[in-house]
Length: 351
Ligand code: SF4
Image (cartoon, helix red, strand yellow):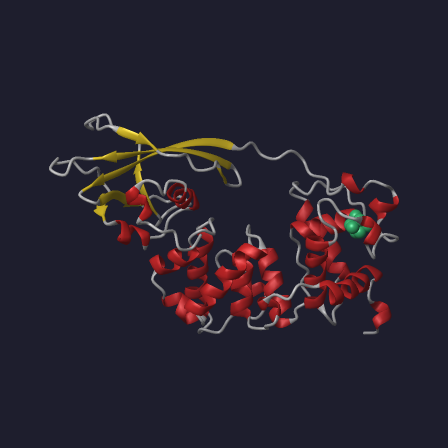
């Protein structure tokens, strides 16, 4: 195909990318396993935060087999601090599926890759194009923003029709001779140039960009009101006796399944009333549809008191608790209260 057949939008952003791209390790490889790992980490995570996790996970699990055979607790521990732990669990399920259904060889086409747990249309297109040069256009938040502005698309990006509309447009623009370069370029362009508050005066697309020509950049992307955020209150007791802590591993099917926590106050009607010392509350924890407020108290149980242990809880030393996977909320609670001696012994290594 001749260069002239490339849409001017594609050639412009690809020329811009050649000059402005950030050097990131997952861009220096064609290994689908490493690219997949980076894409899962970068879902809901900024590049600067995700980079050390990428390096740490790749070092701990250099191959898809290593990840498939890893202890879940080890994986969660390495994932600690990134949040959205279902990503880590799906990562392992997908690695096991690669070993079982694809004989240990990473699937090579979009249609196969999208069968892996935790992989949606965006991630499948990213892996298929970056690793195997399949002409599948990626559509993420950056792509929504860039295309909606450049082509003044009025489709509400929160609507069910949006993905189809933007995918068709991106697919019509992707050059067959370099789909990986185009996908990288459009996402990087959205991340660095066509940002939520862009400087259009330095943009190479300014003369081409419809919303800029109409002085309506701020109107795009069209986005309806967010879904209502549910507020949740969580109250913890940091219960200490004989230098041990009363903790549990979350067993129920929630986003924090497999992570460890202090005593969560749900029903303490049967409990003796020990004095409590209020701890500093960690910052409000924001998830996509939840806002979690947390308060906590330290309780010192006398050494010789026979406390009835609530179901599911165990006594554990601070150093053993340190090695368990914990939610970001709990890590924040610990680091905000290092003046409490027993919490000093739980150093959150992966913050
Ligand atoms: S001119 Fe402004 S709105 Fe249009 S693509 Fe460039 S940065 Fe984005």
